[in-house]
Length: 137
Image (tube, rainbow, N blue to C red):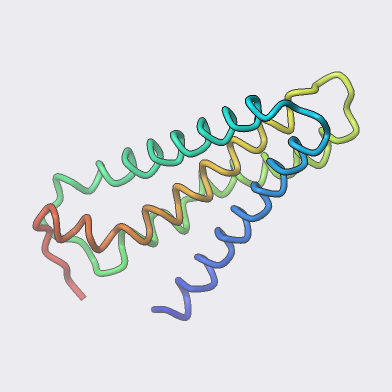
């Protein structure tokens, strides 16, 4: 199963790297440190909320398949679509002078989804043990 999950995890980590690049590009174009720091805090908070809400759906379950929770996050179609849209719009936003905050919004969405997905995928085993959920193989 690692042959499937590892490339997916690496892709989400690469997405997090691109989100950090967006954050750095905001910082280098002259945005104040307080502004980019606030964006990072909002991104981290939204990542935690995304992971917590996603994991809350598994709380009431009595048993799960061994890789069900990580695969739920790694292959979430809605999250993938939102991430791709944020990345695509960030490319377009570089040439649009009418929307100065577009890169900031793209950073927050991309960062929250990628970090939230990675965190929830890595935390899944601990979550299962903490809530006494039986794991089937």
